[in-house]
Length: 259
Image (tube, rainbow, N blue to C red):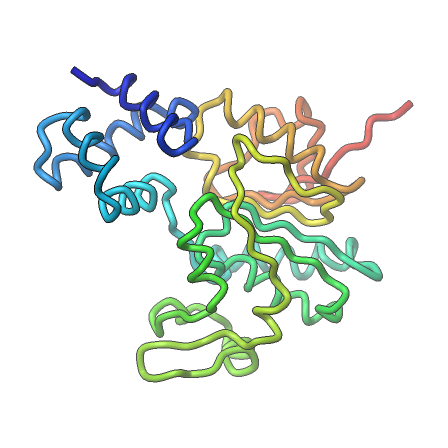
């Protein structure tokens, strides 16, 4: 009989995703809800079916990678980024990484914001996610009318084209400014020389071992004095042990050791 631990091992072998690095209680609750919704009686029965059923397999990947995002999520934090932090890091060129970007709202938000400071031709925005399907959606830049409701009017008018009553497409200039790439935070090599790293509302799903590993790799990814922007439920406990210094709520700066 395949229990949770065996299921985790089989999924790792099948997908390369190590569920043991996610919080077990949270992940079990999500999986058992999924299994029950499809009327499977066990982890074993569910795994056997998803390993041969493409639709079920894709649904599983989408469900566990938790693709929830929106434009300018937590607007007050974006205001702090715009008014208090970006002016200090803008230079002749800029490298930004939006990690676990899902369907692209976050990297497109930062691209729109950066047009106030710098020509996007001088900016590299790397946007990554483990789910290749959401990246394909992100590249198209088409969003529902509901999902753009919170986009500031100045950006909506300037950077979006209304397709019909139900959808909008973000402008080609903004789309071209973002490089979307598939990336696994737990296993893949990280981008380097990053000035602004955005990873929000993702690490809450990982256990302490995984978070420790990711924070250390984020540190190595950042340029000297680079800024790390986290989600509203993800303030780093004891950030100095990772050589991060809090500079504003939800924002950290890379500390350069002296000597």
